[in-house]
Each structure stands twice: as C-alpha cells, then as structure tokens.
Amino acid sequence: MLNSLSVSRALDSLVPITRFNRGEANKIFDEVGASGCKIVVKNNSPICVLLTPEKYKEMAAIIDDQYLLSLAQEREARDTGATITAEQLYAELGLTEAPLDDVSMEYGVDFE
Image 1 (cartoon, rainbow, N blue to C red):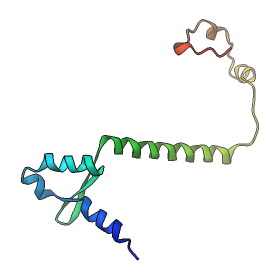
Image 2 (image 1 turned 45 degrees about the horizontal axis):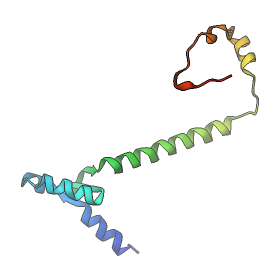
Image 3 (image 1 turned 180 degrees about the vertical axis):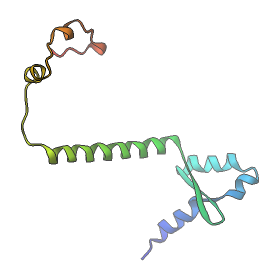
Image 4 (image 1 turned 90 degrees about the horizontal axis):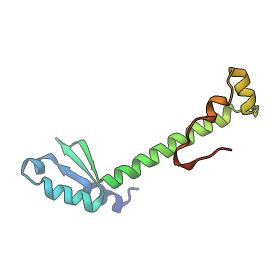
C-alpha cells in the first residue's frame, strides 16, 4: 500500500513547465531552496530535476562513497593475501630510492 505522506510529497515536488513560461522561475527556485528538490514536468512527463547545491553535493558524496565501497569490495574479493615490500617492488621495477630523496614534500608530509 502506498504511503499517503510520500504520495503527497511526490505531488508537491512536481512543477509544470508552464510555471516557468509564466515567469515564476524565482518563486520555483525559492521552493527548491525550501524543499531541496523539484521535478519539472512537461506533457505529464518529467524532463528535469532541480536540486539545491547542498542536496546535489550530498547526493554526489553518496554516489562517490558507493563507488569507492564497490571498488574496495571488488579488490578485497581478488586479494590473494600476497604482499611485497617497497624494496622488493623497487628491485622488481629497477628503481632506487635515491631520486625520491630530493623531492620536496607538500603539506609537511614526511614518510620517514
């Protein structure tokens, strides 16, 4: 059964495109600021979602977190448990630490 509160909330979030045509953009943007989100409809079909910058950042952060979580889970699933030291990697790649000694570190980070 549909929650009447969510149905009412969904209906309140719809904005007919004709309101923009009537010059109500500022009022609509104020409504977006108050609610966080509005869905613009044209011919009874959604064509655009209006979000506050804060809501957009919140949603983008959630998407980023989910992406990083899935990446971590994928890597964890492939992990064999085998590791090598930095020195072993340098030797395998034919590198030495000497060129790193002269690199200035930003932000006061010191790895030694």
